[in-house]
Amino acid sequence: MAANFHNPISQAVRPEDTAETLSKYRRSQEQGKADYALMVKAFYDLITDFYEYGWGQSFHFAPMKGGESFEASLVAHQHFLGEAVGRKP
Image 1 (cartoon, rainbow, N blue to C red):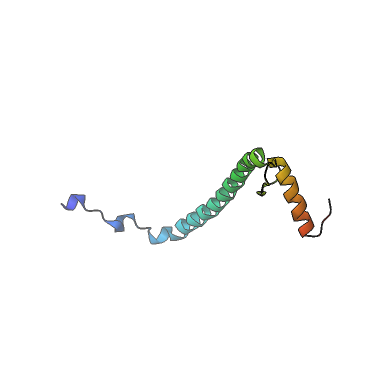
Image 2 (image 1 turned 30 degrees about the vertical axis):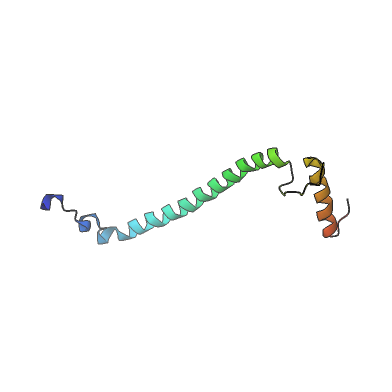
């Protein structure tokens, strides 16, 4: 049974390797942050194309009045939002 026993001490970092191991860990953390930032940018670059395909340049939803087209509802809502903040067409 002793042959199957896993000794975690055998996997421990030797005292003389502590500084190097810590440095590798910190570099891996920094690289992880850089990789994460690249992934987020790539995701939003990709998903933006899908949003623009579905909604055009307007990423907000617009209420549609009876018989109003999707495009007309976006234009009307953009005018409403512009007026709400004091802008004029």
